[in-house]
Each structure stands twice: as C-alpha cells, then as structure tokens.
Length: 127
Image 1 (tube, rainbow, N blue to C red):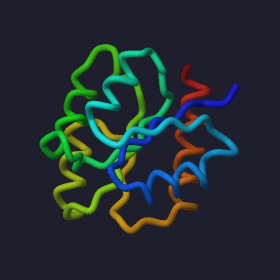
Image 2 (tube, rainbow, N blue to C red):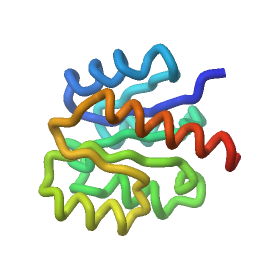
Image 3 (cartoon, rainbow, N blue to C red):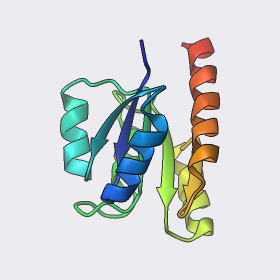
Image 4 (cartoon, helix red, strand yellow):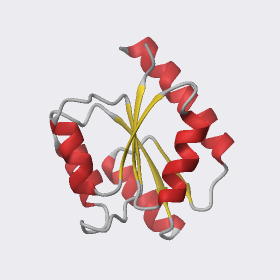
C-alpha cells in the first residue's frame, strides 16, 4: 500500500510538479488552501506526510502549520514546508513548529523526493 502525501499549495504549477514527481511512489492528495486541507483531514484521509506552503490564501502565514503542530490528531504527521519567505524566518518557524524539513522556493524536486523517501523510510521503522 502506497503512503499518502497531502500537498497544500495555492500554486497549480507546484501541485502539478509534486504530483508528477511523487505520483509513482506515493498516493498524492492535493488542496489549494487551508480550509480545503482541513476538510480533507476531517474526512480521515490520514496522510503520512504533509507538504505545504506557510502562505495560504485563506489563512495567516504559518496558521495551518501551527494548528497541525498543536493538534493531538495531526501533530504526529510529518510536515515539509515549501516557502518563498526569508530563509531565516522559515528556519525559525519550522524549528518552532517541529517541521521535519523545509525548502525555499524555487527548489529542486529531486532533492525534495530524496528527502521524502528518507522521511518515509524512517517512519516505516518507527511506526
């Protein structure tokens, strides 16, 4: 059974790129904003990994990531951030919210895939 990855990004191009890169190894689910993502999570899709931009059109910066990190239901899900914010701010916030890895846009999708595979392998052993 393929592991599930939830991609949350307002950019259609980013969602398409990630679906293309991850689609053969992972079950990819996408959302365009924070509300859509929370709806999917409430429907018990149980992703193994969430990839998100901290700047979503319907929420304040970092709001979704903060909610995920504080939720007893979702804080166990690994989160990767793709951000166009400053590297310093992104690093600080990711550490604060327990994000497993972050990439600044533009990013190399093959390096991202390699990171996802490493995270996925570690989680297989732990879970």
